[in-house]
Amino acid sequence: MRFSEIFSRRARPVISFEVFPPKTDSSMESFRAVLPRLVALAPDFMTVTYGALGSTQSRTLEIAALIKRQYRLETACHLTCVGSDREAIGRTLDAIAAAGIENIVALRGDPPQGQKDYVPPPGGYRHAIELVEHIRRRGGFGIAVAGYPEKHIEAESFESDLGHLARKVQAGGDVVVTQLFYDNAHYFRFAQMARGRAVRVPIVPGLLPIVSLQQVKRLTSMCGASIPTSLLAALEEAGPDEEATLDAGVRHAAEQARGLLEGGAPGIHFYVLNRFHHMERILSEIRPLLVSIEKGGRGGAR
Ligand code: FAD
Image (tube, rainbow, N blue to C red):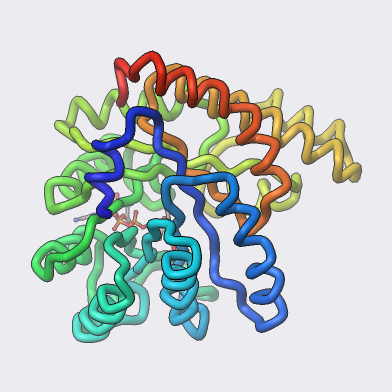
Protein backbone atom coordinates (compact mmCIF):
# COMPACT_ATOMS: atom_id res chain seq x y z
CA MET A 1 0.00 0.00 0.00
CA ARG A 2 1.40 3.39 -0.96
CA PHE A 3 1.81 6.37 1.39
CA SER A 4 -1.17 8.29 0.00
CA GLU A 5 -3.47 5.34 0.66
CA ILE A 6 -2.01 4.65 4.12
CA PHE A 7 -2.71 8.24 5.15
CA SER A 8 -6.13 8.56 3.51
CA ARG A 9 -7.51 5.25 4.86
CA ARG A 10 -6.68 5.68 8.54
CA ALA A 11 -9.30 7.02 10.92
CA ARG A 12 -6.58 7.61 13.49
CA PRO A 13 -3.10 9.15 13.27
CA VAL A 14 -0.53 7.08 11.38
CA ILE A 15 2.38 5.80 13.48
CA SER A 16 5.62 4.88 11.74
CA PHE A 17 9.03 3.71 12.94
CA GLU A 18 12.38 4.42 11.32
CA VAL A 19 15.21 1.92 11.74
CA PHE A 20 18.74 1.82 10.35
CA PRO A 21 20.58 -1.13 8.77
CA PRO A 22 23.02 -2.74 11.24
CA LYS A 23 26.65 -2.54 10.09
CA THR A 24 27.92 -5.92 11.28
CA ASP A 25 26.62 -9.49 11.35
CA SER A 26 26.46 -9.48 15.15
CA SER A 27 24.46 -6.23 15.27
CA MET A 28 22.22 -7.76 12.59
CA GLU A 29 21.54 -10.63 15.02
CA SER A 30 20.49 -8.24 17.80
CA PHE A 31 18.38 -6.32 15.30
CA ARG A 32 16.54 -9.51 14.36
CA ALA A 33 15.70 -9.93 18.05
CA VAL A 34 14.47 -6.32 18.37
CA LEU A 35 12.30 -6.39 15.26
CA PRO A 36 9.41 -8.53 16.59
CA ARG A 37 9.20 -6.28 19.66
CA LEU A 38 8.88 -3.21 17.43
CA VAL A 39 6.37 -4.92 15.15
CA ALA A 40 4.32 -5.89 18.24
CA LEU A 41 3.79 -2.17 18.87
CA ALA A 42 1.71 -2.16 15.67
CA PRO A 43 3.17 0.72 13.68
CA ASP A 44 1.37 1.38 10.39
CA PHE A 45 4.65 1.12 8.52
CA MET A 46 8.40 1.10 9.02
CA THR A 47 11.12 2.85 7.05
CA VAL A 48 14.75 1.80 6.67
CA THR A 49 17.49 4.42 6.30
CA TYR A 50 20.12 4.48 3.58
CA GLY A 51 23.80 4.76 4.57
CA ALA A 52 26.24 7.27 3.12
CA LEU A 53 28.14 4.66 1.13
CA GLY A 54 29.12 1.01 1.35
CA SER A 55 27.55 -2.23 2.40
CA THR A 56 24.74 -0.82 4.55
CA GLN A 57 23.15 0.49 1.33
CA SER A 58 22.27 -3.01 0.15
CA ARG A 59 21.15 -3.85 3.69
CA THR A 60 18.44 -1.17 3.43
CA LEU A 61 16.57 -3.24 0.90
CA GLU A 62 17.40 -6.52 2.65
CA ILE A 63 15.85 -5.27 5.91
CA ALA A 64 12.85 -3.57 4.33
CA ALA A 65 12.11 -6.77 2.39
CA LEU A 66 12.56 -8.89 5.53
CA ILE A 67 10.06 -6.76 7.49
CA LYS A 68 7.55 -6.85 4.66
CA ARG A 69 7.90 -10.59 4.00
CA GLN A 70 8.19 -11.89 7.55
CA TYR A 71 5.79 -9.53 9.35
CA ARG A 72 3.55 -8.45 6.46
CA LEU A 73 4.10 -4.87 7.53
CA GLU A 74 4.29 -2.06 4.99
CA THR A 75 7.82 -0.71 4.58
CA ALA A 76 9.65 2.08 2.79
CA CYS A 77 13.27 2.22 1.65
CA HIS A 78 15.11 5.50 2.12
CA LEU A 79 17.12 6.40 -0.96
CA THR A 80 19.65 9.22 -1.40
CA CYS A 81 21.47 10.83 -4.32
CA VAL A 82 24.89 10.23 -2.70
CA GLY A 83 27.35 8.24 -4.79
CA SER A 84 24.87 7.04 -7.44
CA ASP A 85 24.38 8.12 -11.03
CA ARG A 86 20.96 7.96 -12.73
CA GLU A 87 21.49 4.42 -14.03
CA ALA A 88 22.46 3.15 -10.57
CA ILE A 89 19.40 4.84 -9.07
CA GLY A 90 17.27 3.19 -11.77
CA ARG A 91 18.69 -0.24 -10.90
CA THR A 92 18.11 0.32 -7.17
CA LEU A 93 14.50 1.31 -7.82
CA ASP A 94 13.97 -1.81 -9.94
CA ALA A 95 15.37 -3.99 -7.13
CA ILE A 96 13.14 -2.28 -4.55
CA ALA A 97 10.08 -2.78 -6.75
CA ALA A 98 11.00 -6.43 -7.37
CA ALA A 99 10.99 -6.98 -3.58
CA GLY A 100 7.37 -5.75 -3.49
CA ILE A 101 8.18 -2.50 -1.68
CA GLU A 102 5.93 0.34 -2.74
CA ASN A 103 7.30 3.38 -0.92
CA ILE A 104 10.49 5.44 -1.00
CA VAL A 105 11.73 8.18 1.33
CA ALA A 106 13.54 10.30 -1.28
CA LEU A 107 16.47 12.35 -0.01
CA ARG A 108 19.53 14.15 -1.24
CA GLY A 109 21.69 12.70 1.55
CA ASP A 110 24.44 14.33 3.59
CA PRO A 111 27.99 14.87 2.33
CA PRO A 112 30.00 11.69 3.03
CA GLN A 113 32.23 11.83 6.14
CA GLY A 114 35.23 14.09 5.68
CA GLN A 115 33.50 16.21 3.01
CA LYS A 116 32.11 19.61 3.99
CA ASP A 117 29.79 20.24 1.06
CA TYR A 118 27.53 17.96 -0.91
CA VAL A 119 28.97 17.35 -4.37
CA PRO A 120 26.65 15.66 -6.87
CA PRO A 121 28.16 12.46 -8.25
CA PRO A 122 28.96 12.47 -12.00
CA GLY A 123 25.75 11.69 -13.85
CA GLY A 124 23.79 12.00 -10.60
CA TYR A 125 21.58 14.51 -8.82
CA ARG A 126 22.21 17.76 -6.94
CA HIS A 127 18.92 18.04 -5.03
CA ALA A 128 16.27 15.67 -3.71
CA ILE A 129 13.70 17.17 -6.09
CA GLU A 130 15.58 15.58 -9.03
CA LEU A 131 15.36 12.18 -7.34
CA VAL A 132 11.63 12.74 -6.71
CA GLU A 133 11.16 13.59 -10.41
CA HIS A 134 13.11 10.46 -11.41
CA ILE A 135 10.93 8.24 -9.18
CA ARG A 136 7.73 9.88 -10.47
CA ARG A 137 8.77 9.39 -14.10
CA ARG A 138 9.45 5.73 -13.39
CA GLY A 139 6.20 5.29 -11.47
CA GLY A 140 5.25 2.52 -9.08
CA PHE A 141 6.10 4.16 -5.73
CA GLY A 142 4.65 6.38 -3.04
CA ILE A 143 7.16 9.09 -2.12
CA ALA A 144 7.99 10.80 1.17
CA VAL A 145 10.24 13.88 1.27
CA ALA A 146 12.10 15.55 4.15
CA GLY A 147 11.02 18.84 5.76
CA TYR A 148 12.86 20.95 8.33
CA PRO A 149 10.86 22.70 11.11
CA GLU A 150 14.00 24.61 12.14
CA LYS A 151 15.30 25.02 8.53
CA HIS A 152 17.79 22.76 6.79
CA ILE A 153 21.26 23.45 8.11
CA GLU A 154 22.58 24.59 4.68
CA ALA A 155 19.55 26.66 3.68
CA GLU A 156 19.98 30.41 3.28
CA SER A 157 16.71 31.11 5.06
CA PHE A 158 13.61 29.41 6.44
CA GLU A 159 11.61 30.90 3.54
CA SER A 160 13.92 29.66 0.79
CA ASP A 161 13.96 26.20 2.37
CA LEU A 162 10.13 26.20 2.44
CA GLY A 163 10.07 27.20 -1.22
CA HIS A 164 12.27 24.23 -2.10
CA LEU A 165 10.06 21.96 -0.01
CA ALA A 166 6.92 23.17 -1.81
CA ARG A 167 8.56 22.44 -5.20
CA LYS A 168 9.67 19.00 -4.00
CA VAL A 169 6.08 18.21 -3.04
CA GLN A 170 4.76 19.55 -6.35
CA ALA A 171 7.26 17.30 -8.13
CA GLY A 172 5.63 14.26 -6.55
CA GLY A 173 6.00 14.03 -2.75
CA ASP A 174 2.97 12.31 -1.23
CA VAL A 175 3.92 13.09 2.34
CA VAL A 176 6.45 15.26 4.19
CA VAL A 177 8.30 13.72 7.14
CA THR A 178 10.11 16.22 9.32
CA GLN A 179 13.56 16.32 10.79
CA LEU A 180 13.65 15.80 14.58
CA PHE A 181 12.75 18.74 16.86
CA TYR A 182 12.08 19.04 20.59
CA ASP A 183 9.73 22.02 20.76
CA ASN A 184 6.33 21.54 19.11
CA ALA A 185 6.08 25.26 18.36
CA HIS A 186 8.63 24.70 15.57
CA TYR A 187 6.41 22.05 13.95
CA PHE A 188 3.19 24.06 14.12
CA ARG A 189 4.85 27.15 12.66
CA PHE A 190 6.47 25.09 9.92
CA ALA A 191 3.23 23.26 9.06
CA GLN A 192 1.29 26.51 8.93
CA MET A 193 3.86 28.19 6.70
CA ALA A 194 4.07 25.15 4.42
CA ARG A 195 0.26 25.26 4.06
CA GLY A 196 0.71 28.90 3.06
CA ARG A 197 2.95 27.63 0.26
CA ALA A 198 0.21 25.29 -0.96
CA VAL A 199 1.73 22.14 0.55
CA ARG A 200 -1.45 20.09 0.90
CA VAL A 201 -0.01 16.63 1.67
CA PRO A 202 0.29 15.27 5.25
CA ILE A 203 3.19 16.82 7.19
CA VAL A 204 4.28 14.17 9.67
CA PRO A 205 6.39 15.23 12.65
CA GLY A 206 9.54 13.17 13.18
CA LEU A 207 10.42 12.55 16.84
CA LEU A 208 13.67 11.19 18.20
CA PRO A 209 13.08 10.06 21.79
CA ILE A 210 16.20 10.80 23.81
CA VAL A 211 18.11 7.87 25.28
CA SER A 212 21.42 9.64 25.93
CA LEU A 213 22.42 13.28 26.38
CA GLN A 214 25.62 12.85 24.40
CA GLN A 215 23.78 11.28 21.50
CA VAL A 216 21.13 14.00 21.34
CA LYS A 217 23.79 16.72 21.49
CA ARG A 218 25.68 15.09 18.64
CA LEU A 219 22.59 14.58 16.46
CA THR A 220 21.12 18.03 17.04
CA SER A 221 24.46 19.71 16.27
CA MET A 222 24.63 17.74 13.01
CA CYS A 223 21.16 18.72 11.83
CA GLY A 224 20.84 22.16 13.44
CA ALA A 225 17.87 21.33 15.70
CA SER A 226 17.66 22.99 19.13
CA ILE A 227 17.11 21.49 22.58
CA PRO A 228 14.79 23.54 24.86
CA THR A 229 16.58 24.72 28.02
CA SER A 230 14.09 22.97 30.33
CA LEU A 231 14.71 19.63 28.58
CA LEU A 232 18.47 20.18 28.65
CA ALA A 233 18.28 20.96 32.39
CA ALA A 234 16.30 17.74 33.05
CA LEU A 235 18.87 15.72 31.10
CA GLU A 236 21.81 17.38 32.82
CA GLU A 237 20.21 16.75 36.19
CA ALA A 238 19.95 13.05 35.29
CA GLY A 239 23.74 13.12 34.75
CA PRO A 240 25.33 9.70 34.15
CA ASP A 241 22.22 7.88 35.47
CA GLU A 242 21.02 6.06 32.32
CA GLU A 243 17.62 5.16 33.77
CA ALA A 244 16.92 8.75 34.79
CA THR A 245 17.95 9.97 31.31
CA LEU A 246 15.66 7.42 29.71
CA ASP A 247 12.79 8.49 32.01
CA ALA A 248 13.28 12.13 31.02
CA GLY A 249 13.48 11.16 27.32
CA VAL A 250 10.34 9.04 27.47
CA ARG A 251 8.44 11.74 29.39
CA HIS A 252 9.38 14.42 26.88
CA ALA A 253 8.65 12.27 23.81
CA ALA A 254 5.23 11.20 25.12
CA GLU A 255 4.36 14.81 25.99
CA GLN A 256 5.54 16.01 22.58
CA ALA A 257 3.56 13.29 20.79
CA ARG A 258 0.40 14.08 22.77
CA GLY A 259 0.70 17.80 22.01
CA LEU A 260 1.26 17.15 18.31
CA LEU A 261 -1.65 14.74 17.98
CA GLU A 262 -4.01 16.97 19.96
CA GLY A 263 -2.93 19.82 17.68
CA GLY A 264 -3.98 17.82 14.59
CA ALA A 265 -0.73 16.22 13.36
CA PRO A 266 -1.58 13.40 10.89
CA GLY A 267 0.69 10.93 12.68
CA ILE A 268 4.11 10.57 14.27
CA HIS A 269 7.26 9.20 12.66
CA PHE A 270 9.49 7.89 15.46
CA TYR A 271 13.23 7.62 14.94
CA VAL A 272 13.47 4.48 17.07
CA LEU A 273 17.22 3.87 16.58
CA ASN A 274 16.70 0.09 16.60
CA ARG A 275 15.58 0.01 20.25
CA PHE A 276 12.23 -0.99 21.65
CA HIS A 277 12.11 -0.53 25.47
CA HIS A 278 11.58 3.22 25.32
CA MET A 279 9.11 2.83 22.44
CA GLU A 280 7.00 0.39 24.48
CA ARG A 281 6.71 3.00 27.21
CA ILE A 282 5.98 5.90 24.85
CA LEU A 283 3.37 3.95 22.88
CA SER A 284 1.60 2.83 26.04
CA GLU A 285 1.38 6.49 27.09
CA ILE A 286 -0.09 7.73 23.81
CA ARG A 287 -2.26 4.70 22.91
CA PRO A 288 -5.36 5.99 24.82
CA LEU A 289 -5.17 9.26 22.85
CA LEU A 290 -4.85 7.37 19.54
CA VAL A 291 -7.94 5.34 20.44
CA SER A 292 -9.94 8.39 21.45
CA ILE A 293 -9.00 10.21 18.22
CA GLU A 294 -10.08 7.13 16.27
CA LYS A 295 -13.45 7.06 18.06
CA GLY A 296 -14.07 10.77 17.93
CA GLY A 297 -12.89 11.48 14.39
CA ARG A 298 -9.84 13.55 13.61
CA GLY A 299 -10.84 17.10 12.78
CA GLY A 300 -8.24 19.74 12.01
CA ALA A 301 -5.56 17.32 10.78
CA ARG A 302 -2.52 18.99 9.32
P1 FAD B 1 17.12 18.72 -0.49
O1 FAD B 1 15.66 18.78 -0.54
O2 FAD B 1 17.87 18.61 -1.75
O3 FAD B 1 17.62 20.02 0.31
C1 FAD B 1 18.99 20.19 0.66
C2 FAD B 1 19.33 21.67 0.74
O4 FAD B 1 19.29 22.23 -0.58
C3 FAD B 1 18.36 22.50 1.57
O5 FAD B 1 19.10 23.50 2.22
C4 FAD B 1 17.41 23.10 0.54
O6 FAD B 1 16.85 24.32 0.97
C5 FAD B 1 18.33 23.28 -0.66
N1 FAD B 1 17.66 23.10 -1.95
C6 FAD B 1 16.75 22.15 -2.28
N2 FAD B 1 16.40 22.27 -3.58
C7 FAD B 1 17.11 23.31 -4.08
C8 FAD B 1 17.20 23.90 -5.36
N3 FAD B 1 16.48 23.47 -6.40
N4 FAD B 1 18.05 24.96 -5.52
C9 FAD B 1 18.79 25.41 -4.48
N5 FAD B 1 18.74 24.88 -3.24
C10 FAD B 1 17.92 23.85 -3.05
N6 FAD B 1 20.21 10.98 5.11
C11 FAD B 1 20.79 9.83 4.67
O7 FAD B 1 21.96 9.84 4.26
N7 FAD B 1 20.10 8.64 4.70
C12 FAD B 1 18.82 8.55 5.13
O8 FAD B 1 18.23 7.48 5.15
C13 FAD B 1 18.18 9.76 5.60
N8 FAD B 1 16.90 9.74 6.02
C14 FAD B 1 16.29 10.91 6.40
C15 FAD B 1 14.93 10.89 6.77
C16 FAD B 1 14.28 12.06 7.14
C17 FAD B 1 12.81 12.01 7.52
C18 FAD B 1 15.00 13.29 7.18
C19 FAD B 1 14.32 14.56 7.63
C20 FAD B 1 16.34 13.33 6.82
C21 FAD B 1 17.00 12.15 6.41
N9 FAD B 1 18.34 12.14 5.99
C22 FAD B 1 18.93 10.98 5.56
C23 FAD B 1 19.13 13.38 6.02
C24 FAD B 1 19.09 14.16 4.68
O9 FAD B 1 19.72 13.39 3.68
C25 FAD B 1 19.82 15.47 4.91
O10 FAD B 1 19.08 16.31 5.75
C26 FAD B 1 20.28 16.20 3.65
O11 FAD B 1 21.26 17.17 4.05
C27 FAD B 1 19.19 16.93 2.88
O12 FAD B 1 18.34 16.07 2.28
P2 FAD B 1 16.99 16.61 1.55
O13 FAD B 1 16.37 15.45 0.94
O14 FAD B 1 16.22 17.45 2.47
O15 FAD B 1 17.68 17.55 0.43
